Image (tube, rainbow, N blue to C red; front, top):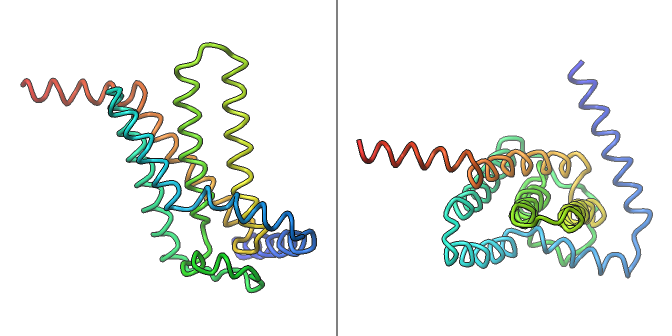
Length: 200
C-alpha cells in the first residue's frame, strides 16, 4: 500500500514537471529566477538579521527568539531530511544560473520551507500589531502569494518536484507555529516560569 502511494506521488511529480517544462518561456524564466532568490538561505538570513536588529532595538525579545529558533529549526530539519532521504534532483535542469544551489538533495525544498516560516512569521508580526481587518487580510494575502510564488518557482525552474515543495511548506509551517508560540503567549508563559525559577 505504501509502495503504491509512493508510486502515485512520483507519477504525479513527473506530470507536474512535464507541465512546468511545457510552459517555460524566456520572460517567465527571468521572473522566476528572481523570485526564487527570496527563498534562498543567504537572502533569508539577510532579512532575518535586519528584522532581528529592529526587534531587539524595540525590545521585542520573544519575537526575536521566535524568529531565530524558527529559522534555525527549519534549516536544521530540512538539511537533516535531505541527508537522510537523499532524493536526486530532477534530471532535466537546464538553468546554469541555479547550479550553485543544486549541490544538496531534492527532498524537501529548503526554499519553500524558509519562505513559509520566514514570510509567514513576518505576516504574523504585522497582523499582531494591526487592528484594521482589511489591512490584516492584505498582509496575509501578500504573504500567501509570495510564499506560493517561491514554491512554484522551484518547480517551474526544474530544480524540485511538486512533492519536494509541499514537504518544504509542511516543514516551514511546523516551525512557523513554533515561532508564533514562542513570540506569543507560549513564550510569555515560558519566560514567566524561568523568571520564577531564577528567583527560587
